[in-house]
Length: 273
Length: 265
Image (cartoon, rainbow over all chains, first blue to last red):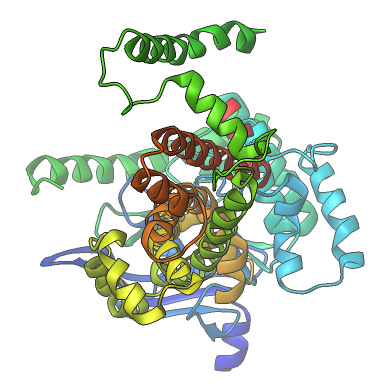
């Protein structure tokens, strides 16, 4: 296979990526020699204990940060800055509080100077898909946490991005809302089929959503193991109760436990942060 | 309803102070002829506003409105000038590190110089004209606006900046659509402080640098021993300062409607 064809088969590729943060005379190595490839339309989950550098990895792919060493490639081009081709859903909703829900959702297409005729109907349809029909004129402050996060998802869908980056988007939600949001995301993804890079520390969430789960080590973060999730799609939420699911869960649990223990030991004996 | 119930409490202290003042003059607790009684102030103020019924030799008769207009116009012009320079400059300093290194130290060095200290300089450069007054007012209002705008810009949530950038916003769009609205509450704080300084500056400037307006009347009345007019002037300036502050608050409530929702949530 030629190099061009090879990169075309990868929506996202990381080659030997290192990221070190330097502040004053202190430096922290967040990510150490990560290689990762995500195929187009693949749903990849980065799973790891908190503080393992998975958000750093996502920020690198988004273009918010640049790697200290190595290469980040998206759709065949080196990533040097954020781009609407790689839309991000943040851990917090990060909505513009001075804009209405609708204005937040059309911010992307509007900024990219697309024709209103093109995005208006789409935005309405997406708001309906995420269960926010009729909330367009509301302001973020009037919404619950789960609704805000749905606006955060709606606004990236309105951009029609080929790649979707999600940084623990449901981490701050309560368990019930989280389950609903996971179902919603699966439904939306079945329909739009973007390439997704999703970050979480929640094993069940990873298994429910992913085609591929990449387990990360404790800091400095490396990819410890890559697991293909063979569960059939579409996946109803009940899949989480099957023996097959539980077997996978057990496997991941063991992998994650090792790292959590290591991370805890590191913080216990390491210098005070 | 709750507002109506609160009103008597707000009035209690001013009324008590007025009564005390009245008693102090009537009972001659204070030297006669130096401090006027409240009634006398009101009477003089009335004449100052509406003119005397009989022909009067008083130079203050019926001149209140024109002097209020003189001072208000100066405040408005100086304040507008200050805002027009300070808001864009504050956005630039807050956003651009190079601009901050270049301009911010000078601002911080000049800021402690009181506007009163600028007075001789202003007169020397601009003469006894409106320009002197505008310079002082603009100078005084400039600092709080620029400093608060800078703070507002620096407080912009990093996530919102990132969100805008991943949605395709260039630097100009980010500043116009994210940084500016995000800094707006701070900018309004700066404007409120600025308009307060502007009223201080206009009085100082009119006392010395020009020959009209409330500050000029205040100083003139002091020289000819018309303490009643002095007190009426003080009250007028206080009232005008209060009104201009309310106007800015009103404008900010309109511009920051989304914040009211946040506070309620």
